[in-house]
Length: 130
Image 1: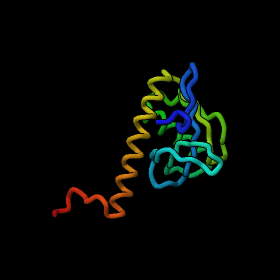
Image 2: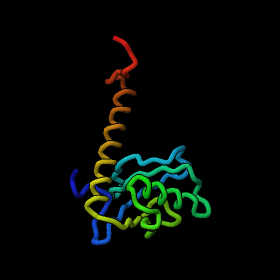
Image 3: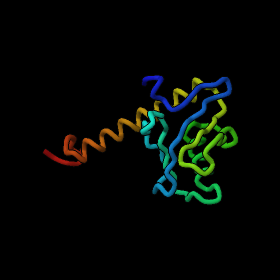
């Protein structure tokens, strides 16, 4: 993955991730990497929680903690309290966190490409017979 296309930055304490959050998104999940109109790269995250009283922010930090295998206390919202665009800091081993993010986003992109190909009829589902 091209370093200029990743939405996270490394520091001595961990990583900082640029996010685009969709509250009331139907499920708690990470939808991959997106490049915004201004060229900024973000990690797309959706949560079931509503954007009220900090519920969506709490859901985002809990989801990232779970996915990255760190305690919730190690995930901190840096900016974007009332915005869909957020900056999150995660304390931990930067190399390990970056590796986990890379694997997770690659798997998400592959899953998304497979779903798109299926919807276009290019890949047959396994349960379909010839």
